[in-house]
Length: 483
Image (cartoon, rainbow, N blue to C red):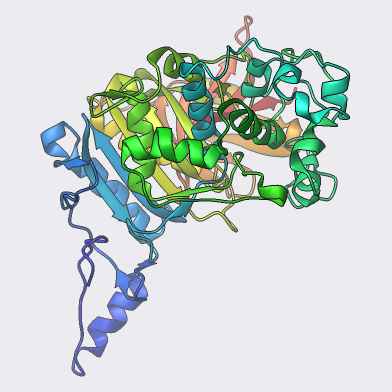
């Protein structure tokens, strides 16, 4: 039996049917053999000839008890739909667990986390002087596509606008699901020429003025790599990124005419996903080699949009960035994120990289669950504990929070009420629960299957409560209080 899952197993004999019943009825997760996993005993990740040095959690200053608490919640089903978890701390792989039949040899479709890898390829092409800079006009780089609107009308769209998704194209990226026929992304996927489809879109906003999530722009980045380097983006990645990192087993989806799906088609093993994160944590270096320049790493992971692009997160060059308060400390992070919860998190302040792979079909709020794992469990295990002093907000304070709240964008409603010296909150698609105070205006709401949501009440200059912010890891939803 494989060691990857490292979970204690109880066998049975004909005389131990009762024990078997207890095991099967209590187990929540199963390995690839269909056998129940329960209990947890930490083991150091296996040392392999793949470029990773391994170490223990405690040797690298990570509280193993907090990590075990997280694992117990996952195995009990309190946090679900997770396929793999890795932690790299101080350059050492210290934690590696897989669930539901997945293991370290399973390539995982990382969806839009592919975009961050595509950004690295642009940076390498820039370092090699194959591209002249982010202020270059795109129509100058794609002159072979005459007959399309973008090229013929010489749209004033620079490479930087494409990287930051501020090109201003008419593209309702999040208005419709990827399966809706009105979705430009779906229309692109079913078209016979993805590149031409993007270049024929009209401009709806001045370039640089507004962030609009757009898969087509990242497809265009792959074509820019091809045109500037003379190699398809996957071959360029193999020679200039994957080979230096020792990544040999990967796959990349292609569309019509062999166009590479640089927006979401890459599949990688979790340990190789961690290499991408560690490359950036080390400012572009791997084993002493500068794979991509330090200035590109810094520039691509900084908030280039300076807007609340979505749920409190910032956006760089195809990398997300955010900040959260953990154990009283403001911790900044940048990350690659893919549909259904595929993440590469990089935290320079704590010298760590974490990888989460997840189920992507039928995984509600899957984009948030890995962030909550990170903020609620993994990062706190690397920080000094917060004050253990009990917080008891006065009933008069709790009274000011009571009322109805709404998030108009999704037509979501929440109810807050006080009973005695306790606060109860009813969030959408959940049930009313007592919340635990962290401070006079901050509370934890336990959401089964995800973990704790941090809620914060915000007042205006007149000390009137106007908002309730729900933090899902680095993301947040702002509910406005009804008056």
